[in-house]
Amino acid sequence: MPVFTQREKLKTLGYCDVQDITPLAEAMLLKSGMVDGIASVFVPGSTASITTIEFESGAIHDLQKAIQRLVPENAPYEHDKRWQDGNGFSHVRAALMKPGLSVPFHQGRFLLGTWQQLILVDFDNKSRIREIVFQFVGE
Image (cartoon, rainbow, N blue to C red; front, side, top):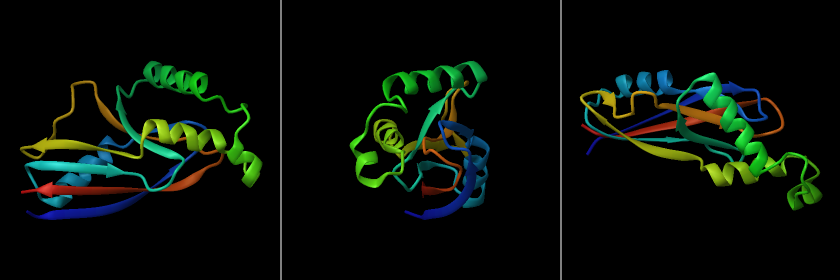
């Protein structure tokens, strides 16, 4: 079965910056030439995540607030004691949210819900250039 892999870069702001990557993923699917199969969307690193949400300001704000309540930035983290980089919270957040997901596609379109978009969430404590790996398996 054919496999198509593409890496793309995206500038993020850190501190729970949420980016809609659906248009980018759709462009990569079109570039792959595949019409049926499954896509893997993955962000290398330990301080960012890929997930889905309705990409709308209220839902994004609610997600950011929930993440802050679950894993506050100002709590003590052993990672910070060891490395002195102040981003222990970002590692915990990313571990809970996961670095990637799989999305089926059919007839050249992702099988996402009506209000569902693919997002990258950058939890680090600084702006970064993130790499996103898109891998498509199908025909």
